[in-house]
Length: 289
View 1: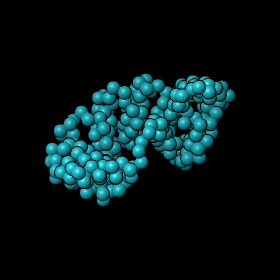
View 2: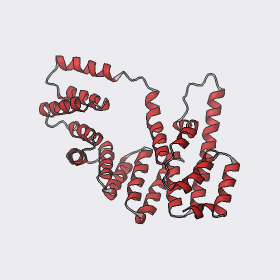
View 3: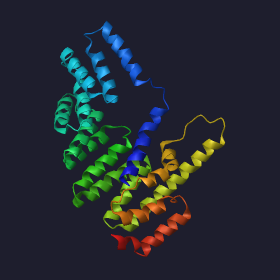
View 4: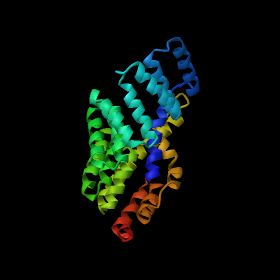
């Protein structure tokens, strides 16, 4: 289920980018390099190329450009943010947090930086501090991204059972704000099952099923209209790839996940909901925990 959530989250984040015309990274790097030849002392250009190298995962080239940008423009704050993201990707977490701390000292309300530092703290086994950064990012965002809620909840849940209720509260806030985003619903269901709150798990699953029915109708309307130009929503990616998601389900709490997930392949049908209700009522799930 963890990998399923990651697949859905990736679809949510990546799909909009796929619908836009982006130049090839190599081409963009070449273009910026040509500009640097004309303006070799421009710190902003070196920072821009560093970001492109980071996105290309060329760490040595990115590091060299970050260093050059910092030397040319010591007050350029984006260097610390970009270098911190690079160090996070390289799993050099202590150094990454030092960079983000410097950046946030200058720009304490930068949402991107708060989320990045939250991820770093989560990897450094500082779950409560990580959740605080995600919470602050949510507070500052007019339209928070689903992963802000998800990663904040995951951080709190990893801090122990005493924080599970707070993790669920974050997910519920995300669902109230963004709607029944499947990645949030799936994790909320998992946490409810962990604490043996099967009625709550079923209620959340029913709400998510209703949302998926709405998505299926939207997709059907889109497919039925030859003139439609609006692409399917990210939720459609989730629905279309459900079988692939199923193959990614981990063995963690294998019996519980097997029961819930086997039904989830049909969770938009009345039969599925009735079947899950019977499972919970007959305590089959309870017996597997």
